[in-house]
Every structure is written in C-alpha cells, then in structure tokens.
Length: 417
Image (cartoon, rainbow, N blue to C red; front, side, top):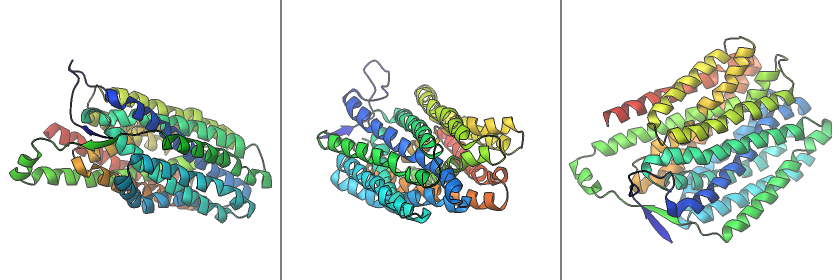
C-alpha cells in the first residue's frame, strides 16, 4: 500500500510528532537505529583494543573505521537506487542480511591472526549499515508533518544513542577483560551474537508490511516553477551546503569516538576500562539524552535556533578540551557529546527539506557524506602519531567550524523566509 503525505495539522491546530497511521512503522524502523548504534559503538572500543594487543599505530587502527565508512561512501547511491525500485522493506531486509554476513565473517577472519584480515568483514558490515540508514533516515522524516521532521528524526536517532551506549559497554567488557589470543578471538563473540539478532529481525521484517510513503507535490509547485528558478536554486544551495556540513560533522564525530579512549588514557588519566565507562555512561549517555531533549525542544522551538546553539557549544567544548586543563579538559570532551547529539539528524532533515519527489535521491547522496567517517580517524590518527592526542583535536575542531557556518546559514535562511 502506498500512502501520500501532505502538510496537514490536526483538527485542533496542534501538530503530532508522528502521524497516527504511521505509529507502528515508526516504532519498527526506530528499533533499527538501536541495533546499528550498538554495532558501530563496538568499533570505537575495538580501535584501542587492537592498539594494545597487536601494537598497531593509531593511524593503522583508524583503518577499522575507514573500511566501514568507505563502504558507506561506495554503497550509498546503489542503496538509494535499490530502495527507490524495490521499496523500504526490501532495503531494510537486504541491509540486515548484509550486516549479518559481515558479522559472521569475523569468525574466520580473527583465526587468520592478522589485523588486516578483519577489514573485509568490516567492509561488508558497512554495506549493510548504509542500506539500513539510507532506508530509515528519510523514511522517518516522512511519517508526519514536515514541520516536525527534524524533531521526529532526532527522537528516532536517540535510540541510536542508546544502542551506542550499550555497545560500548559490552565491547569494553569483552575486549579489556582478556589478553593475547583470547582477546583477539573475543571480537567474534559479540559480532556472532549480533549476526543472529540481525537474521531474526530480517525474518520479522519479511512478515511486516511497511507502507511506502509518497510525497504529494505541493499544490502551488507549478506556479512556483513558472515564477522562476530562484526557489529551486536556494534549495540546491541549501542541499549542497548541508552535504558539506554532514561530511564535516562525520569527520568530527567519528574521529572523536574512535580516539576518545586514547584521549583519556594516553597521559595515564584513566585505564582503558575506565575510559570505556566514561565513553558509554558519560559521553554516549549525554548523546542519547541530548537527542531526546533536542527532539522534544524542536517541536516547540525553531530547529535552526537549537542547531546554532549546539554548533557554538561543540566549538567551545573542543577549545576547552585542547586547553590542557586536566580534569576540565577531559570533562569538556564528554560534555561535547550533548551538543553534537542533534547534529546529524538535524542537518539531514534541513538538507532534504522542500525537495519533494527528489527526497529519496537526495537522501542517498547525503549518505555518501559518511565518507567523513573514513577521513576523520585517519587524519586524527596521523596527527596523534606525530604530535599528541590533544593537538590532534584540531582535526575535529576545524570541521566543527564548518558545521557552525552551516548552522549560521540555516538560521539566517529561516529568518529571511
């Protein structure tokens, strides 16, 4: 069944976060955010784990993230094409199956005894992730009034934050409680469990009907086209600026996540296990709470205002983290997570706002921005190997400045409108 969405308010004048007829699809799709959040967070712990047991450099360990996010970059457009032709449900099931295959491949990979052998399963896992995200992110934005699209996506993404928190905790227990060959082999354990869960969820989705949401063209779109291309040009500029901001955000977020444990442990401030707790119950907990609170606030306050405040907060926290003030600098990096929490779903929603029938195509292009997750850890790892972890934070700082520029642009654009 295909359902057409239009910009409608409730009879009482209030705007629902999720349209009544879409509550069940929203819950089902949101569950996927939790699953892939936990799976990705394990990689952040795995980065430090391999530095310890295989003595690889920070630059080498960044290849873990690089392989996953290169799969995002290469798979985004094919994922979008598959979803447009076969629908959201097929895209979700295919993504789950690819994710399961990649997870099962860890078993033979770790037995081969080299760090580089795990890169292949990571790439396959990444292909599954990009299919899931390309299907889920735009789908969630369409399950209600366009005015609440950013708020709706932030609420869904908050479960991604919960998954990240749980994944980091479980990863720390598996990887930092063992040593030597036993520790190396332990990577197969959580991913085998994840693979089984993904297969079960894939089977469930084969029996669940997800309505395909079609965007109704605005009634006055034809007149607007006749009036000139100014509006289309403005949408194009907003989209490509948003695309650049998403790349910049991914560079910042993934590089910080990847080397968070290093930042906390390299100077002896914490042990790896303590740093894992700081990441999961500190940074990632704030990340989840920030998305929930941000999603609620955006249903009451202009999205662009909250986005701008958070963009300023990320730059301020990184400057404090780089200032060498001991505990205060460590706390600043943790607090940074609450400010960055709303950024990906907010930039994503703002970038595709008003694109109408081009929403799905634009969404698959936006998913290519996750290539920043391949660039960021590599760049930060290289700087950290040659200087210090504190100095290496200049990498996410510089890209968060780009995000701040987009936040200022979005706020000004709203004010003009």
